Image (tube, rainbow, N blue to C red; front, side, top):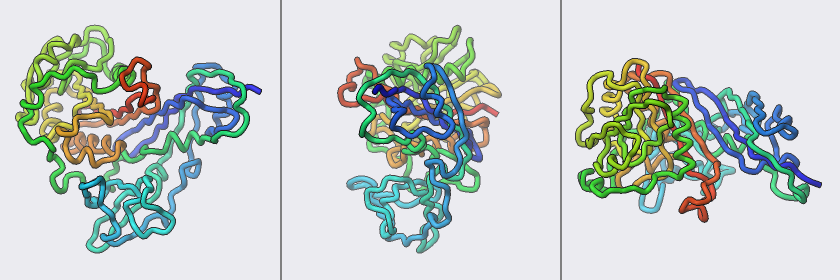
Length: 398
């Protein structure tokens, strides 16, 4: 007996109080005989490639409904702050931590990586919410059938995959921002870096290796392609030898980066400027000089992000786009300490807070993409079969 195996793109859409969110997951091998599909998506089994279905996701559909009993109070000494060998973190309001860092809770174990949100730090009591980050969010799930084939011998045994649980698990929900639950990001020294020497020293070395694989780079360009207009004046902020921009006609792209040789190698740039934003956040451009600003795979290196984001707003025309994208690959010596302490899905929330801080941006959205295959000719294809995930955050100048 043959079993139909499909490649499906799932898109989970939801809204927090301050932004809209889309989390995309490419499922490479959906087994219609064995796996669990969300209710209402059974028609995919007989559908042709390109078919799309959509359904509402209710609390309790693989994502457990929120329970008051999963909001717990613990003593400060029950929070095991060992984030990594030799590195400790303190609980901060609004932040997420693995449940396994909370000791003495019945039914949980040290290695439990499911997220717990710190709701309050008050003297000798810490309050944590152990519910799924999406437990109270109305959601919609869309699925697109990318391809399918019949395979024999797969109708016995094997593992049953719950695809809604997979798509919604691993982090979606942490990037939600709500006015009633602000996060304490900036206590301590969040912008410290391992390499404290001037950035000009580090970036004097020309680096031409790609920051993400070709599939991820193309996906970033596709996303930007849906946000940019032909003929737009674009500032590629913290640019290098690659801009990750779509092939839209007549884009006028200015690259601002740290290495002149890298900028010279970038064929998408019409204008090139060397400028150190950490030393001088003010941008050397007139007010409303650009229709869009993109910052690709670099925001984690900003030590003065608030000043830079204010400057981005200044050089954007009203309604202009500011889009920030990033992956889980970066230069650790130059990334801010806070970045390495955050879950991958908390980092979009941090960038949203950058955008929200001075009230200069609206129409805020986030996007994530996981699960695509890595190109076969990529240097890491043998050890890392999946393409680099990436996240994006964007808003419009008010």
